[in-house]
Length: 225
Image 1 (cartoon, rainbow, N blue to C red):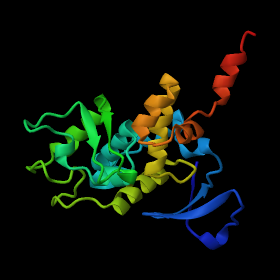
Image 2 (tube, rainbow, N blue to C red):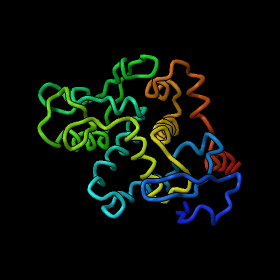
Image 3 (cartoon, helix red, strand yellow):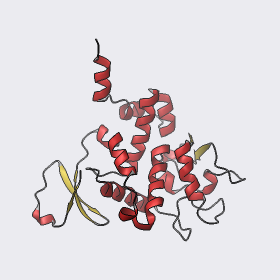
């Protein structure tokens, strides 16, 4: 787990670690070395989701939790999430849509795509759309006064959530995106589905990022030969 540092001058940082500044202090974390480090393990995800307490996040605990849940269940990029409007997730009658359409003006390289909304994603959307009387053109992820949370603010929320959870390396929105897409691939072993959900133009990129074999999978494959 991470180490919170009171006095940076009192420690020696080796090549495998670095010091990062969190909202409530400095932390010693591991450097990310491989593609597998760019996603959360099951234990890290559980640690993260259990950390959204009032002690850790004060009055923003619920908001921060549901931001993380939305990333983990849609694989959105941070710019795509920060640009979401209520009309992207609710229809004209106020019902949550079956799929979220990532608009080309917010997507990377203008590549629009559709992401089916699972139960957890819908719970997050309900939280954000149930907060105050806002019209369909309002930002989905907004401050109490209705002003949109910036991309940088959302990045900081995810980073500080990881530090407060005790995850031993730095995480960000892209970590959560990689986690979602990795879980999709592991479940279905289908590069095309993973590619479409990721919004990749080239399936080779999808294969490079998400077809890594884990030690557990290798052990299962050789068991009983």
